[in-house]
Image (cartoon, rainbow, N blue to C red):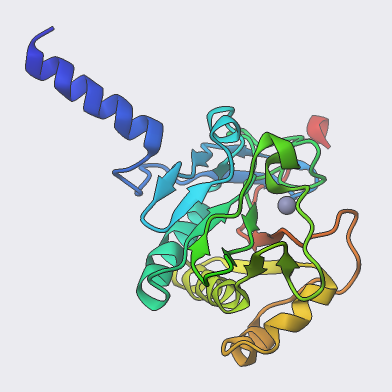
Length: 238
Ligand SMILES: [Zn+2]
């Protein structure tokens, strides 16, 4: 292989590995069934990182646990782009989403058809700097972190303004891409802090927040389910 060929190959591999270039997918994904029992065709991986966001775990990303429906990927990425303009210093971490072909995604009870996304809460340190939520094998990739009802954990504080802004942009971009947000699951105690944010008036009108206690406390992340028209599962899959 020529030197130029080798360079082109290297650039292509890096592009694939980090999803840095194109965010337009040739084919739209197709979802089947429901978030609790479904699958996905043509799922796309969220990029490992971007200007103001990163995946929760390199291992999780490489293992293929961050695939979504292409429409959901477009909405999530477009919302990060808007957040870069409105809160330029804030950084965000996304969590688990699903397999490329959907299906059972343990330990999650949903995340089966590409329409569920976990987003780790944005946090600020003692100096007020926005920092990525520290997700590692020592805290179950972030999912074992525990915040108090005011959103504090040690020197870290949940940035509720940034979180509200993120949900706001997810809703706006979902409309722009012709899909909808079904619900946002977030710890009911912590939800109260969103009411003090400047986006609350909008969120209270447009977002269905969870009202019941869920099977696992959603304090270190929010779970977002989108609505995209899906095909039914076949008779044998039901
Ligand atoms: Zn989830």
